Amino acid sequence: MSQDPKPDRRRFLAGAGLAGLGVAAAGVSRVALAALPEPIIQTSAATAPPLQPKSGRPYNPVVTLNGWTAPWRMNNGVKEFHLVAEPVEREIAPGMVARLWGYNGQSPGPTIEVVEGDRVRVFVTNRLPEHTTIHWHGQRLPNGMDGVGGLTQPQIPPGKTFVYEFVARRPGTFMYHPHADEMTQMAMGMMGFWVTHPRSPHPHIAAVDRDFCFLLNAFDIEPGSYVPKVNTMLDFNLWTWNSRAFPGIDTLNVRKGDRVRVRIGNLTMTNHPIHIHGHEFEVTGTDGGPTRPESRWPEVTTDIAVGQMRQIEFVADEEGDWAMHCHKSHHTMNAMGHDVPTMIGVDHRGLVEQIQQVVPDYMLMGERGMADMGEMEMPLPDNTLPMMTGQGPFGAIEMGGMFTTLKVRRGQKPGDYSDPGWFKHPPGTVAREWTGEVPAPARDKAAGGQAAPAADVTVRKPAGHHGH
Ligand SMILES: [Cu+2]
Image (tube, rainbow, N blue to C red; front, side):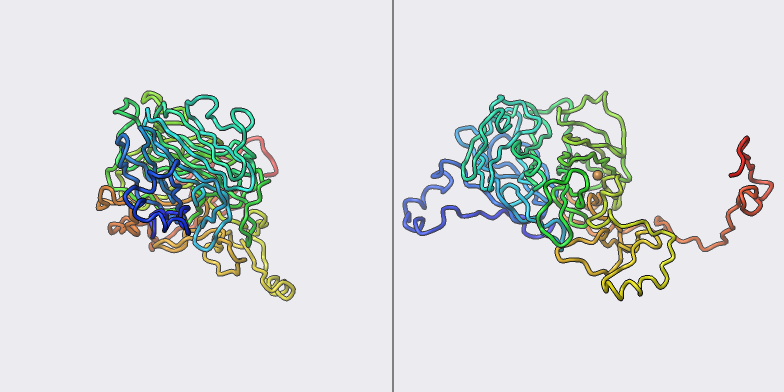
């Protein structure tokens, strides 16, 4: 968690008229005077601390990775939220800002947290240059509240405010996103998380010590530019969690022994096998609700397909800094990787100098593999992230995109989400250089290698093949 997680209040009422209200207004809260709740705007990309409910039914709040939960007000027993669809600036990682569309100052928008059985009213103000709607992905609700522009409601024109209202009927993990010019609006970052907590202890929903959530999303932003290309279908160059790329994704900081839940939704256009090191987890819920315990099995990777949500749970009982990432290796890289030809094994001696006479910034990439990219001091266009980056205690981490760390510490206090720093490994528990003798590898003589030591190795010769 970094600095300034508190939301700003954008003072829509500020201006000449307000000062004149004077004493009359001072005794009554400004919110109570308004017909709809004041929208709360967040400009920071930091992970906000969990928002403890101060009104309505109690629940254990989630922590939105590099995000925040929308505040609400209770109005005659109805939980009221106000979302503003608007252009936003989002820092993807330090060194790169994207011009996106989102809600209440950020992409993704704020997480909405309610309790099973809550009557929820969401005001949606459209400050985009085109119409929009919001679809409440996975919810049971009246058909006319489903948010499909043209099918279940008229589009929300620019400048207008619509209101959605329904009862959050079943507990679970949900998302929200436009169902209007979807290709453009989702490529621009319009989406958010929704969690409906159980009203009372639920047989398939465990109480947990830490409950994290984030969305998988992706952008195609040319190096040096700020606005995503909205027509891209597959060849995205920024693979993000909650519109952040490594090393901009906060770490998941937990106490040793904590039961941890992570809720993940996929609003990209491809699947993401999400992998956690050092622990086994179970999928305890989908967008269809909590899974039955007899349907669960241990995994270390779970594939999250397009439009799906997965809720995973595990006991964090191994101390350390455990990598947590998408297992598609192209999704743990930032922009510029994909059009580079494979150069491994190509001898470039003398060539770089010749090319640099014509193209002064030319750099050779990948002659020994791509790992050099993690440490390379190369001139990047403005507003561009290195392809793979991030420093760890042992050097460059050589990652980008959908990568972060699960930090399990004995001393992490309950409710403390701050980064404990790098793990201090107990002596003798880190992979180290072998300094003894290293015998040359034995090879099969028939295949052109040196003779294998006769006693220990049985060489199985291929039968019926010639000319290999
Ligand atoms: Cu992926």
